Image (cartoon, rainbow, N blue to C red; front, side):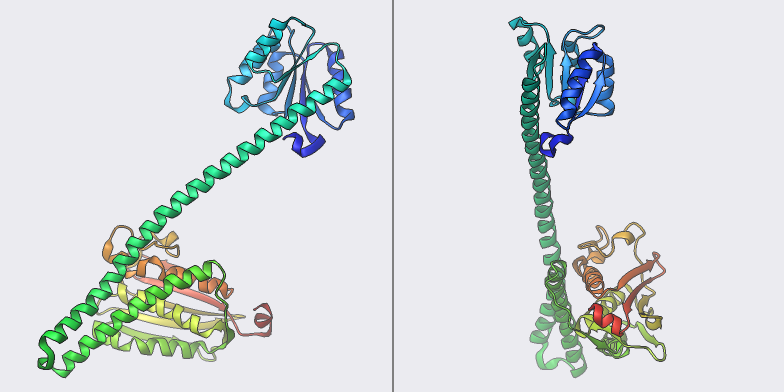
Length: 389
């Protein structure tokens, strides 16, 4: 607490003469200060430790422990090195004052105490302490900002490496397919040519999604992406997104199913954004599900909420990663193959941010080797939901 907080500053008065303590206390209280009392050095040190004051008025001549010894002890402790101390003494010798200043005292008052001098020196010392406190706060703020900048710099470097690595994989696939077409040309059977073109298209779509995730995660974090809310038929969005992946399902030998409850109500959402959420979840499910596996998209409603989930029978998520799966660039540890399959760790981050912008929530359940279930909850399209939007 400092003088900047006004008359609420607390002052510890230390003197073995109770009359002196009562006198100083009466003067200080009339000016609004909170006064603590101690009658010897040991008691003063205990109060400072348990209830740190803003200023210490310390008598020099005391039994057992002098004011000089108390001052020396306080200055050796890191937590009290800057505690303002005004020494109160009947000693007039210059060497006594020099000794007190060398031990760390900030000022001196001579007995008998003059009321005006006491208040003036108290205010002066507390103003200095207020400036010291402000400098310390700014120093700590600068240190915190510097640490944050270093963290951001390392984060950017890591992000750049991850994004470049992840974009190179689908790009390498596209270039490889084009080279095969160029080398074999008309010798390629129509079916083989169609397969290479489809693989190239899938890789290009993966790259586009990764780039879009990077851009939109930044917009969502800065709340610069307006939602075009409307009444959205969730069943239609699910059918559209699963239809796009049917060729991938057939090629990779993964069975895909949809289980849509009857009478599924519309949701209050941005249709395009909802489609991208589902596309990201399906993409992750396919990448983690081996041939012969199964992916199920299920939707149901309960009260004013609609729930849909994407479940797979894939490799699952490691237990240590599960609490952080929706954070940026968290994608499976040091395993490059697994990390790449999570689209630089931004796909699920995008899903979380987009769903939270809708007033919904997302959760995941998974066990290694037993698959993963990602569940999304969104508000129904109701008058209340539209008003909130």
